[in-house]
Image (cartoon, rainbow, N blue to C red; front, side, top):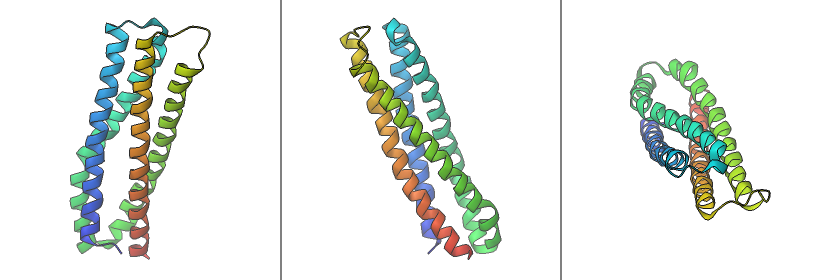
Length: 169
């Protein structure tokens, strides 16, 4: 059942996940830039560039969640009281689109995690030094953290979408 408290909880959780994405994305970007420019690990040049780009995407997603959570929460609570049709026309499509985005980011996190593990354990043509392995393992763990966070967010968003659907019908 959709209530004001449920809406509040969802958007508070969304904001917390956004902050978490910002923090972990910043850590991943810092490690990648450090490995690329300070350690000058040539064998990890392309993986670190890819991690930099993906970390920027995670920072962007986290910022969007933090920036829009309060505004969306206020407008949805207003719509809950004054204009319930707005929840059906605006909030339900937004949440369904968000579920798809979360699933895509979740699969990207898994692919990056597996790619980093592949570099550590199965790249035999060029022996990587221990610093390279440490960087790759830290990337793998960070993206495993992203994956677990996306699973949590997907579960809460699907639950919220079901509550919206039951409210609308």
